[in-house]
Image 1 (tube, chains in turn purple, brown):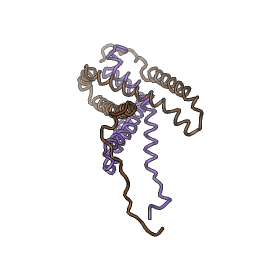
Image 2 (cartoon, chains in turn yellow, blue):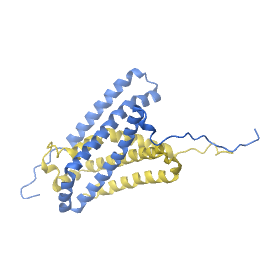
Image 3 (cartoon, one colour):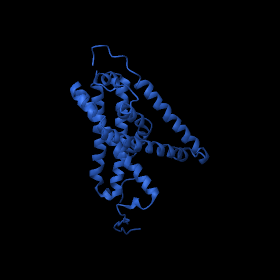
Image 4 (cartoon, chains in turn cyan, brown):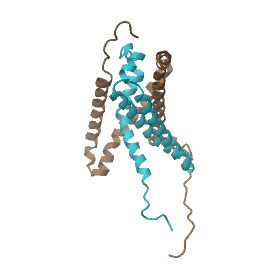
Length: 123
Length: 142
């Protein structure tokens, strides 16, 4: 006797969907964010005003910036942790599926919630 | 039909270094590895926001670290991985579309070019709307 035929795995497609959505976020939004957040000032593309404490507070005051940060951090984490899961499986850790799955998706959920709270904690 | 046999699945043996044997597998695994850097960057941004909440003094100290040589090099490395991810992601987009909509493979190149155009356009919009030059800081501030 196997599992009943109507027992459908509804969890896996959700995480594949988040992986796919995150893939587009990582592909389309993350590179320009890294350029603007980590490299633009270092290569003198933007003035020092943009990276100061005041400049950053002015930047993050916009609700669009807050939403952007949550989407970029959350999308990156759901995409990356899903892939990291399969990297671990590829290296022979598939036996520990029961530990790895809650761990990787737990990190993605906690990180996304943290991004939400941190971003929207600014005035 | 009546007999049930104990299931004994065949597990193929695979060395942990299987991906070093073929350049295609190597590129695949490098792309997979990019996920580690993407996750790392997400946590760096969370840390950045955390420090920003701590106030001006903490953030000033953080900036010295954030724009130090090793961190800029790390930023460049992460950017390289994300660009590799973006290009390979756009290359497989037409394959997903083909599987879903039975498109002809001839349109693959077009879909790739469209994805590149969308990428550039969205990047421009992000810079124009989120990183517009700030209003001049009033004197006495900082």
